[in-house]
Image 1 (cartoon, rainbow, N blue to C red):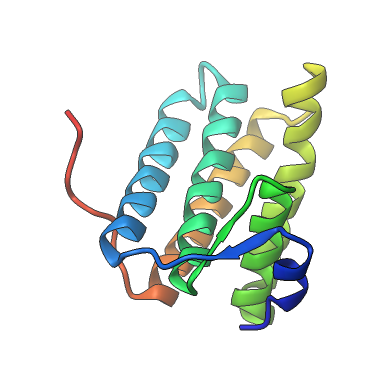
Image 2: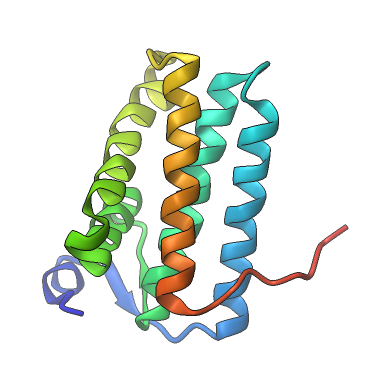
Length: 149
């Protein structure tokens, strides 16, 4: 995988991550998807944020699988870019939906503005779940089964 531009710009750093730690990121991702589904009907904005956070955890796991980690510089944009580069054309529409979610999340997070309907939030959750599944299949790593509580 070619990431020289992201390394040079300081958006990625080389770092070894154990398979166990990657599995933990995936577990957090699946927990966030479960929270998104749970909150959908009563708290759709919270559900959207959980769905997005699930993708951030899964994307972070995918980057770490390749021996890198995102830095504090444009972290979310870097993660979405790497997911698209790694998964390529085969899952391009799912990766593009991740980028769209990032753009939609920004006004929610920083301007208290959110325009997605409940149906759009539900669709985002389904697409997030599908992308996470593809990321897990790509790495051949399943989420850890260790629970904190």
